[in-house]
Image 1 (spheres, rainbow, N blue to C red):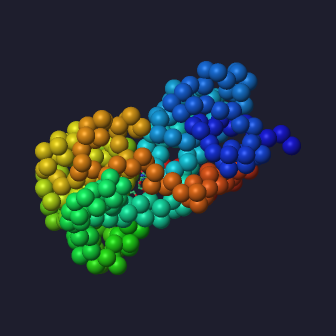
Image 2 (spheres, rainbow, N blue to C red; image 1 turned 135 degrees about the vertical axis):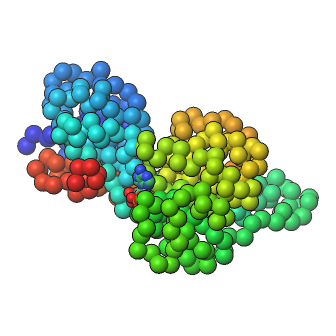
Image 3 (cartoon, rainbow, N blue to C red; image 1 turned 180 degrees about the vertical axis):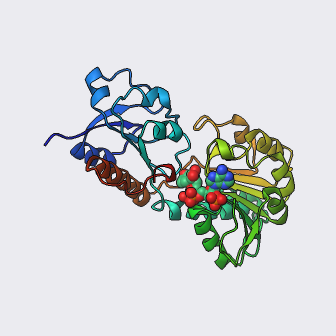
Length: 317
Ligand code: NAP
């Protein structure tokens, strides 16, 4: 049987590439690249894109494929895909929700603890010989019993909140609407919540609607004892305001998994000792990346079989 043609954007690990090659005729394009290298008949025969990465996928690329019917995103966040254009052309878009929620929440808690207890620096204290020469490491900040505010109580925000409860942490959240969560305090204003908490987590979707939603005012409200943890997208925090606040100790620090211009992040972050930096790896476990790839392929298979997508994005549901 002839295998359907797809375009794979971005680099795929062998555990994804092999099953993709088994099911489809796979044409490849670099993340952020163009399809200029593809022959005309491939441009015409490709009906789906397996998309991986954080480059922009807009009309310029989509419209090179006259028979494109579907884009399967590897990841829950699809803020760099021009879904409005896809919808206008009748192109379906899927993502990979749920399968990564636990990992992202786990890393968020881990980053909060690692920053607060100074885990990376404390290990350096041993490796450098400072422990033997200078004695015990400087005292750090307690985690249990603190007040945490979560910007965006979606799947990841909720999973994070559930993980914080056993730490006797007082949970608040900001969302566009109040949720049925009697244990947690709702704020309709992010800065008011920031003023109320010790740690502010950003778990909201990226994209133009939420760009810079955590800005200078919110950081000032969080204050010089406050920690910002961003596990959403670099766009959701006003990065210029954050760097300014960090450099001037207007916030205590930040634990960041996401940035603008990844992987070429602003070098000012590297000069700071009040930050914990992670290379956008919240879903980066073998188990979760395997599950994400499988779900991406299930969506592709459903499209080619003429079935409903397994996990369409809300705009295409
Ligand atoms: P989700 O269940 O769809 O939750 C999204 C949250 O964002 C909801 O709380 C929603 O608020 C809020 N939101 C969306 N658009 C908004 C807007 N225009 N204004 C205000 N609030 C808005 O998504 P999820 O599965 O929790 O994932 C959340 C995000 O995490 C993803 O979009 C992705 O960017 C990021 N993520 C990062 C990594 C990483 O590696 N660091 C991995 C996975 C995901 P309402 O409740 O008001 O609708």
